[in-house]
Image (cartoon, rainbow, N blue to C red; front, side, top):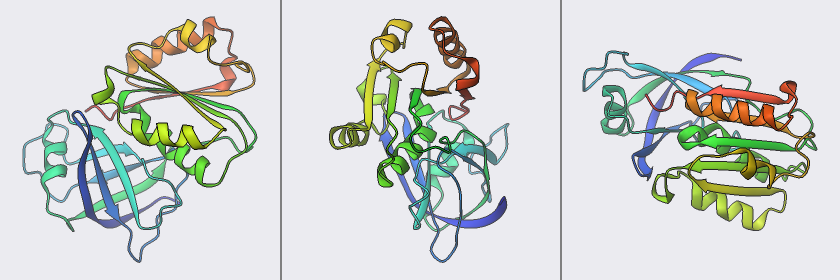
Length: 230
């Protein structure tokens, strides 16, 4: 159910090059969402001007099983909104509305899943991967994760740790663009999997063309053009 609540900022940190994570405490409040969904959040004030205002939609990075906080992550674009969000004092109350979105895991826990994430597009994927790992989801998950370099790859160490211990999760990391050959050489059950593609609009369009060329049925592909860069 969609609703608006006021949540305090309880954490602000840098998690990769020009990439930040902010957490909001739940304390005695409940915020029910599905892994992969996003929120609309509004700041009480802007410390720096921003032509887009004091509100943004941002994907949730934390797992629904985390009852202490919800976390978001984003690229540091230098916008007034993001600078303010990182500089507001802890315990500042933020208006959080949601959850929104259908970029979520399939109903069947046995359904194979393939994620293709570009940069900060990893945010909804890490929420779903964390949740799947916690509930010991039996269906296989493979993540194709593209970044410019290791320093800019958010959550990479955590993803490598999960992949090392969980045989149902495979990480395919690449510094550079993901092409058809990289995907084709990594997946044996391409036609069985549900494909999730998330990242900036040009990346999503390019990957969509790659999957179509590989013969993936359009009905098995889900896209989300990520706005975490603004």
